[in-house]
Image (cartoon, rainbow, N blue to C red):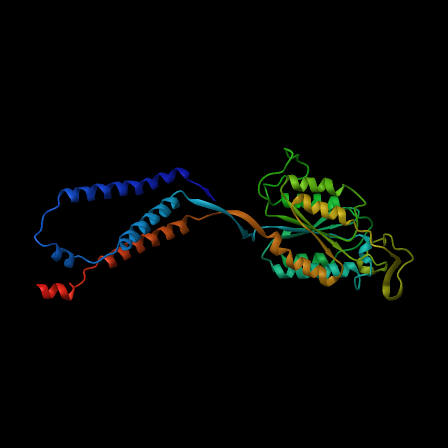
Length: 360
């Protein structure tokens, strides 16, 4: 916890001043004491109080003054809170290997379905941007709350040659820089003091891929750029290591067919030989750890859906400073009121005891 106005703590000096006034008042009362003929009559007239009943209101009042004085200094605490203003950039791999059928009907179709569900769950309550990458990377949809625009873009994804994970991260950084003035674009050099410091930016990058980097910038170089800008990158490795046929429909392949040759097969589909998954989980893990994110493995469509559903609970929670002044003021006021109430209740006038009445 920190204090926004620490100099306001001088208000706490009011407590020792009150104690000094109380001591001086009691001293004067002792000097002005008078003699009375019957001490018994005085005891009968005074309300009976034990020592703890005398002290409790005083200490409650003192605690109330201390808490209220602290409230004047505007205390702040760093807490984890949901951040609806955070932007998520979803970078999706559309390389040719996304046609692998180890995930039914193929990886691309399963990834598109999971991405659509992810976007629908936010229902325009959070800005989401879409980056697609194969041998190159491009921003398909800038960060927006337009659910329909995002869904149409997901449906229009097409596969092509290559896998440029590093370029996808850099493209995502630039997309965030367009809407967050605190994030420099990739063309601007960020001062390097050896270790990136400070709180993470609320915006986050999510990279979904089934392979390893084959083109463009090295992923670790891109991760260093994200780290310098305090942007977290979450990586998702999608698919299995089972060799499976490469099958994509004609509307899932970019013009020219890329690596697929021989024209369409039965049902208007393009086919390729079975191949092993060539995923670089080590690099994906390092990218996530370097930037403060996390790596996830999803071997089927259900697991991928679970990962994307759980992501908002992690990427949209941010540590922010929250002012606690109102809570301190409320606690202080309640303590003071309780002290006054107890003092009034315990000092109320009671009828004299029966024995005292009989003696009179």
